[in-house]
Image (cartoon, rainbow over all chains, first blue to last red):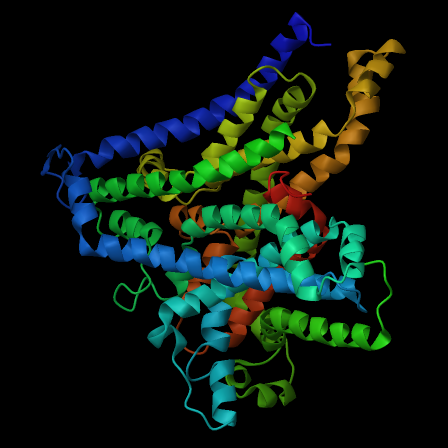
Length: 290
Length: 276
């Protein structure tokens, strides 16, 4: 079917997408790499020159870098644990027959469509605020001292907010996977006397492995670049308690005007993300063959 | 499971599922409820607030005190504009890759996806400085361009997985019957491709509407979409809960409704077809 002529046409049709993405990826990336080797601070325009690996040296040996890496790991890891375990439990529940499945599904999926700045501010003010928030009102009603969530447990609070945003995604994907589970196999196992738990461990969980992997990998990509939730709740603080790599690089470039240093940080972030990306690509590539 | 559950079991599951569903949905519901009360009532205890007078006061105030219409308009222009532009670029590409796959089609698809894996901070600085030099900071045009490029890989992928499901034999049959390339596209392919294109459009409008890295970095006021407008409430003056609620309700309502329609497409779209 593919003649010489149609091949030619196909190339022409693919060219704009490939060309644009190539420029979008290569030009800024090469520029960032170039900046990362320069002494380039917008506040000191007279100090210029070649920095060699100094920017990387300062970024990587700065104590705040290790903290930021650690904060990124805690944030991403925390959200993954909550959403994957919560998502499995919730998907199992929603996969059982009950009245009003459609409505419950709609309620569960809703947080995913709320823009990050809205969900962060709603949680910060209407719920977690130690004076006027819902949790403070409840604490006072039962005679407890209101807790300053974002002040005293900032990272846990942000993990909570972000988990609320991503739990629907995990649930929906795991639920979709559950629905393709072979029910005859389950029944056969049940007749052979397999209990609920062993059916879950030996049949359901292996079936879900692929979906769980997909959830983990895709969420990691999105979670690594979490920005708005931090910017409108804690601004990376108190201190540097919630400053992740993404947030630190944004701060360094836009507020400290340290283009060189921030570029080095950006490249470090790219390298870290690529390590994750390799796994994602393999996963999806395998599916493409199937 | 095919087996019929006992009524008692079904009732228990129903109660549990509704409770959890309600709790997950509650923050949104609460925001909507709060938006219909005055500032003074919004900070009272939940029971006092619910029993206080209901009003549209805060909606009116959001309209008069800020240029809400402008930010809403910006959100629409940026999300719809970038999605349409991405579709225009991606449809031919996805089409060609689905129907005339070459030796390198798979590599091209994977490479496109890999551009999506690049963290935004890696390219933030040149983008920011470039935008500044070209006078594109805080411009709708600049943001539409960025959002188009950000979503292009997802658009190509989604369309590709949809087009891939259109059987090639249908084309051959049409050709045998003497259909020209034009009528083949208009009468055979377009009707089959439309649902896929529609879901792609929907999902990408949602993603672009809620995007909150580039919109926060590259806009301040004139081109600021709702994400940035809502962010301005992070350092407010005076009482603001009711106003924040009203603004939030207006910002999420349209997309929430669109989102509910796109549930199914969401899974395959965001997993690049890995889970269907």
